[in-house]
Length: 474
Ligand SMILES: Cc1ncc(COP(=O)(O)O)c(C=O)c1O
Image (tube, rainbow, N blue to C red; front, side, top):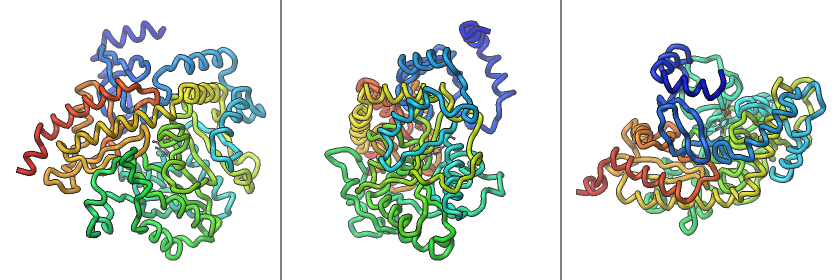
């Protein structure tokens, strides 16, 4: 059936569609709404019930250039007419991929000069594990608490942000050790510090507040990691440390500037591969090409960097960028995949990178991120917001308790995203604590951020009541 008639049919029989969805789709996929997506443009999504939604989720940080950007659509159409699938084992490369290599070399950290392409973040993570193990001839992988690296068996074993991502699926991939990640808001050392609370407060991450660059650390997570290397995972058996520079699903935890340099130093000392997972924080999301460039006080370069999501505006595409020698140790044929590096995906990525550059989206991410954070900060007097974190258009808000403490009522974040849904704004929760995250398209306009802030304020009012803080202090 042609697209138009199918849309009309689904619209006409919307309840029937709902029944078919309930009956035939996997019930194990969590859904945050009952809407059936019909079409989308820019920052707005239209559903079959005739509603228009402001999109502050962008497909979980995927539609970097906005929905259906005309240049991205044109690139897909042109490439589809020319060559859809040039399989990577059959050809040395394809024209779109050759173009993409040139593009990527200009934006990845300079020491990363080799690439491997896949179709999803999880698949790229699994391949990074293979590369690190084969390269070092070691087995263990150290990951961090609150991390999310994906749902395939390798990536799932490195995922600790919520138990439900892995529960029931054991045995998991072995030889994984979990280390603590800085979560300064809930850090016990900070809480015990005489100036702890006044020093931290809500963490605005934009100029002129910008305390991140000045933020010191108790160094607890790095100390723990050093003990892990003495007690649980000998350096000579540790292949890699894998880290998200800003935790994505885990709640946009943003480490102090000393953290990533400390990881780099430990890896250098012991010949351990440093894998930086930029699946959610990469491709201009934070206002720089890569999130790690934003949160490390000094230049830190990974040995392997993983990218996906925003790289191709929603077309499934992912990859690894590595140091030149990283693939030494991998026998011919040990990596591959039917669909990886296909022309349609590469052409979409090329168009996406063109749009990001030509429309100055790094700057837009910084400016609109700042507008968003400043707007949220204005709400902190009225509502129990205890943290605003992230960078650029990767911004999360954590809620505390009605008593002014750090523990929110369970379900508050979901209640806020539900309230947003009622007001036609798509918003996501993040992490095991009570946080929501904003991940709009990087093309989002000033007016759209203002609209999102206004809706967000209404949602907080609905969930917490008009004068929550006044009531708490009375
Ligand atoms: C940091 C990070 N790594 C890996 C993944 C897995 O990516 P995918 O869902 O494309 O498999 C995600 C997905 O959210 C992610 O945020």
